[in-house]
Length: 163
Image (cartoon, rainbow, N blue to C red; front, side, top):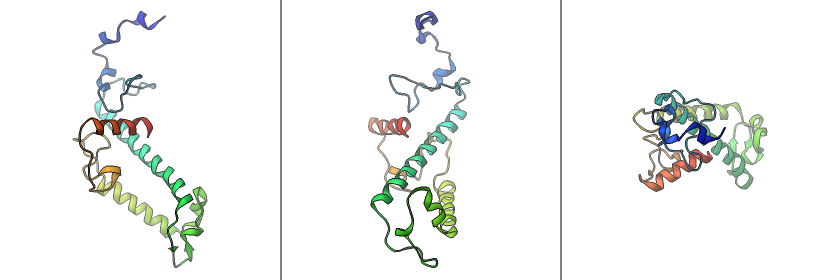
């Protein structure tokens, strides 16, 4: 059986899969890619939630990758914890750092990330997934924004394809 046996895709205009063909991230030559059929019901709210989750996970992964690369070339001078005598230079790269950073340091990180998640980058259903009012270029809070147009769409498509 060949694709021509199924008929012309252009004739399936009522297909729920068509609902997402014009969304960001849909790129040639594949088009809208949903190998597990998670969007076959055409539910736009579920699609937006999944897209926002996809973007967030991709952004976290990119930051985690930078967290592995940057310490190879740069370390802050001074102490991470003066009270415990832990210098930034004493903290190893990768997962070994988990046991070296004091608990108060991890607590500060979790509080900071919670503030960013719930206070700065809040979900707005009127905006596209991953587009936060207070997030500028590279996610810098209240920073400059990308000018709408083809360049912006190209950058957002790249983030979805590679993030």
